[in-house]
Every structure is written in C-alpha cells, then in structure tokens.
Length: 337
Image (cartoon, rainbow, N blue to C red):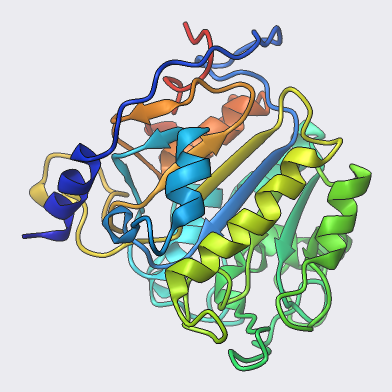
C-alpha cells in the first residue's frame, strides 16, 4: 500500500469532532482570514502524516489534534529541507536550495515574508534552537550533546535582503535586521529554549515567530535518551505549546501553527492534475487558536497556501511568487464567510 493511501486509511479511523464555537473576532478579514495577533509557526522534520500514531505522537494526536483545525490534505512543496523552508517564506525555491546547499553558495535576492512584515510594520523573530550566535552561518553542535544546529533549516539566511548589510549577502557584513531578529532560543546546552521561554513569559516576543528546533527536537535525528525522532518533536511540542498559550502575547487572537518541512513520497502534482508545489509529501498541519473552529479539514493546501494565509492574517495583500496562485486556508476560522 502506498504511503498516500496509508494516510487515508489512518484518517478513516479518526473520529469527527463536534464543532466548537470561538468568540467572534471583530477585526477586518482578508480573503476570509481574520486579523492575527501573535503567530507562532513551529516546523518539524521529515515526517508524513501517516507516520504519526498514538505511541510516537501522543501530544499531536491527542491534545493538539483535538483542539485545533487539523488539515488532512496538506502537502510539502518539494524534497529536501531547505526548499521547503524557503517555499514557506517566499513562495518559491531554486535548485540549489532543493539540494540543501549552504547559503554562502546558494542565496537569493527575492521578496520574502520577513521583508513583507518589515514593510507592514509587523515585528518578527526567527527562533533557532542551539544556534551559537545571531545569524550564525556555520553548522554547529552534535546529536550526542543535544544541540545540533544546521543552517539549512534557517531560511532567513538564504535571503540577501534579510541577511546582508545593505541587502547584499555577505558572510561577514550581517544586517542589523538579521542580528536583531534571527536569534537563538537559548544557549548551546542540551535542548535549551530558555531565552524564548523567558520572552514568552514576559510577552515580549515578536508578532510573528518562526520556531526551528534543533535536529534532535525537530524530528530529524534519533537522539538519546528518547531515541525516536517523531517522539522527540512531539515532546518539544508538549513542552513549548503550553508556554505559548500561557504567554501574555497569545491572548484572544494568537495563532499556533504546527507543520513539517516535508514527508515521504510524491505529491499529487506528479499526476499532472495540480500546480507545482505539492511534491514533498503529505504532512500534518494543525492550527490552534481562539480564532479557529477545531475540526478535521480535507481541503487541498500546501506551503504556498500557508504563506498566503500568513500574508492575509497580517493584512498583506501583495502575495509573492507561488502564494499568488495558492489556495488560502480560510475554511478553518470561526464565523468564516
């Protein structure tokens, strides 16, 4: 049985949840998407929706799925990692990004979400777990020390207009924007999120937060003591999502989005019946927020649609690259038109 059909077989066993009505959100909607307060996008690694079960993902399939809008037909853009992180934040990618090349030899001067947020006056932070310093370009850390940072999972470093001073990509002349916003979740000790946790507790996080765990906690590698990649990301979510929800920044219009960079297998574009951007496998996608109607949703979406939805939620109507043709995720919100 193919991975895709295993995913549908798994979903057939999932109960349908009763509708839960959230308080109405009065702010202006764009394409049916309500105005977002603070947003937290958490990205895991290399896991198909069909890979999740109650043993390896008890938080995701228990607490998260039951309290979120859970998309069953959401697809990553491509294989491998970097192309998907770039797809989520710019609506496109180039061949060297699909090959996970380092930003020193593979960077672009293209419109991206971070620059869009700057123009819109929306504060943002990209939180990278175990990154030794702001905007850090070399790889660092190891699995045995539970602090493995890899720059290929840090999309901001691939954009000249974010990374380099004056909008010119540079290994040495980093922009003030990058140094202020592309930051570590904590120190380089094992699985350290102390800086991000402190900012959450104080409510001092940016309005947009892109959270990249290290390669033990994002599901990429098997690391002791847990020794199971899917369980490791599930444990990260179980630890950090309650802290986000408890933050003064979350409030009545906070949004938590959990997804993965890619899954296994080929996407529906290989059948020539869908546009490009669906080739990276069927992955879990959950939105937890007072603004959503918790349930299962079967609409077809991908990383470009996520970008378009983020743009809409922040009032940005100029949709870049693949986001311009993507299907917006607008069916999940309470009192959606």
